[in-house]
Image (cartoon, rainbow, N blue to C red; front, side):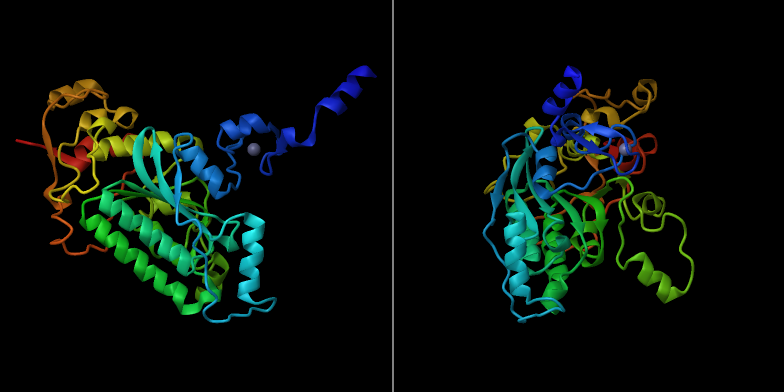
Length: 367
Ligand SMILES: [Zn+2]
């Protein structure tokens, strides 16, 4: 039949992907437009670092930093299969990347940001010396230029091949983030499936706002280890995003296709609209980055009816004028040189869209 011949010839195998969750056939172009999330059941496909950055940033805006940095096999480590150095070489060839962390500068809806993301295909996104160094470097650059920082993770934890050197990265990254937060800068962490071990236990959960993709496994030790240690059945959904948000470990669950919009809303709320973003290089780091905050630009996050707002003399959603405000004194931080390094910089969690009403929670009207 002519029709059959047409189908065979015109339908190459790479046009469709079957969803592993609902088994529906998905058109690859549409799947990509939906950030590799099933249009039928919202299953989040695994994506690599390049895709993650492509979905997050304005097209063509990403400039990678320190792409050539490679790990050294300082311990001459050999696991049950092969020397670490060989494994590194093979992984570099397979992934086309030199390490499991990709850092750089880019723009999110025109706002200049610093960003880092783990590459899970590179030894399970494990954190060795280079990953830690790159996290520290992008954090230091963001501090210096007073840029908002987004760190995205997908990791099996510390890299055992580098022994205690990999564990030291936890302290190093946290110290860098401590200085970053002491300088009054804003960081957002995006946890994806899976984020575990020393990555969860250090920089990935040290952000001002911790977001997570739905149904991600997030934890320190794996469920099997915990179960065997405590010799108890674990509750249903243990260590998933949905389980952790109930317990305050993360602030918000954000489906991947909504990530840019949500981060943009957070930035606008916490830093002001893009045109008011401080030009930052070489500027003395005095006062706090949140001063001059325009709370009227929160857009969709504030679901409160406008009558309630006007009763409290607050600006309309999306408006730019409105009452002048100051943020809570505890969020104001002195300059880098005089500030003490704060290690726990997490603010109160943003819960759901309906409950958050950040105008009330985050700031007080002046006078
Ligand atoms: Zn599906």
